[in-house]
Image 1 (cartoon, protein in one colour):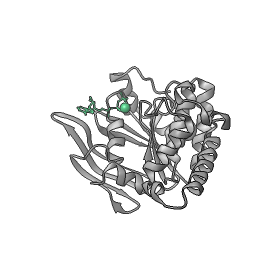
Image 2: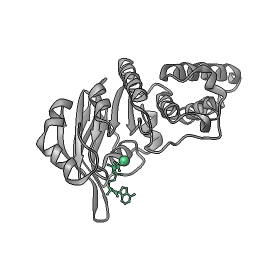
Image 3: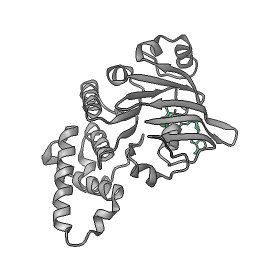
Image 4: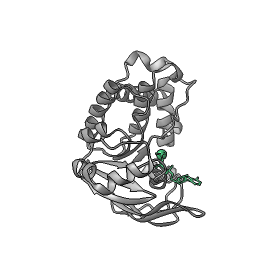
Length: 252
Ligand SMILES: Nc1ncnc2c1ncn2[C@@H]1O[C@H](COP(=O)(O)OP(=O)(O)OP(=O)(O)O)[C@@H](O)[C@H]1O
Ligand SMILES: [Mg+2]
């Protein structure tokens, strides 16, 4: 589904992402891990068209999307969440969902004569998605700023699911959750996979990764140092060395 070939992103002398190649298959959950500053977020920025590549190629469903901008990438069915919350905190939960729908499909704003019908359809699909991610229906009218961190994180996933993407990119989606919330979040990710959606997830929590990932790709100093099943990757001496050598995040 998604393929990266020798993808590079340099910032002056800094090789944030350096000759990275890996793939995400149909209905596959891939964990993208690595110490702080190893290039994980930059990888998602490159795939989602937020940042241009220095060199390399990205393909999605066989199509070359290397030079697509963020709008084009979203339109072909790749959606993402950001490491810091990118929600409109003063707007309500449902308003955030409407904004995401309009950004994903601007035509819906301008279809004459069908506005009321359109609004009802949007509202129903927004409510269905909120229910799917575990946000109670009564929260629809609440300001996002009033929600718990876990609910805000779940809402970010709901926003990424608007307009039925085939691949979602998640950047540390369980940040700020307590253990029980994170376990519940794992189950949500598996439900998303069951819907036929592929997931590329950046995470530090090994327990969550082990619960959901089919495969893990490990970055260190912008390069891929391991790519394989979670158990094998966690036992890989090169991976353990990378974590012990440069970061506070322990593997395990
Ligand atoms: N816009 C930029 N300008 C200059 N350097 C950048 C820029 N974006 C990222 N970098 C550098 O690229 C490297 C990789 O950063 P990136 O944010 O991708 O790491 P990360 O793996 O997501 O880290 P973290 O776990 O802390 O989120 C870092 O050295 C970072 O300082
Ligand atoms: Mg990051």
